[in-house]
Image (cartoon, rainbow, N blue to C red; front, side, top):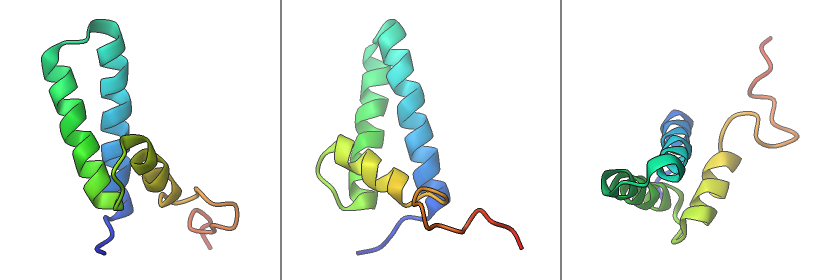
Length: 75
């Protein structure tokens, strides 16, 4: 399976989180359609079938997500 670049995953997660807030404030159909599109893209990018699983998988692959991840340490 191809793995999405962490920057792409971060962008998708941020967009989804922002749209979730917008939907809570004024749940228009355009916001919902964009959320559905991003959810689909997240599922494809993470190899999952559920947006909640996709969000967990995407966040897990972001730098600094795992306790032993040293990708944020600069030498």
